[in-house]
Length: 300
Image (cartoon, rainbow, N blue to C red; front, side, top):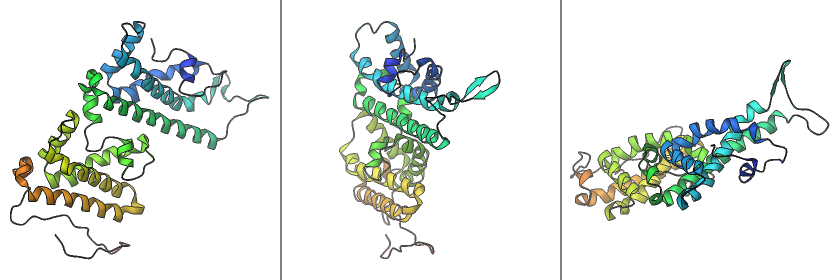
């Protein structure tokens, strides 16, 4: 049985015309699930949901009942998104054709593109909402939290579009955040771990996953998150590159000053080889010839 089984379920999450046949998009449900849902929800959690549906939703499972609409919403939107190019044309014995009659005429290329872009963005927003729901209720979804997909979804200091958007505006877009994720990985490895040590960075993230963060880590985690976001934005948004780079340096320096002042509170950093007892150094913004703004003041 599919995760979507009738046009009424489609209409719950997309304002489909009464003339739309579910069979037009149904072939794309499995593609949407495999490409976009399972990499975030996990195959095991998705299969548990399908098994429950196949058993006529017996026994009653409140957790799966609550999860189902989040998954259906994402599947429907991604299925419509990936079907656009193919259902726009009809294959006939005489070649490809488009619908044209007294009531309907083919939409312009611009309108089709705008619709497709909108569906892609709203589909990723559905993934964001699903992940936010799972994270807020993760004690109810042990299959998900035990999966590799959970590990990947929570691998960074910043793991959601909403959290990123609170510091640098991306319209809370999961699509934008998805495209930034690789840069976030690089920023954490090259800018954060080199400042605080990889061992300590990974320990903080591990405690974040367990919802049990040491008080010492709580003191520096907000600044680490902001450093990650600003350094990422500096790489991706060139119009404000210098501003974001300065802010990233500011926040990582705040972290360094705390852990250098109280190294015994941060033994993984203290023993990493990064910590320098006599002459701590802090990153500086480098003035370049083509900078529009120059920073003045003492180093260190």
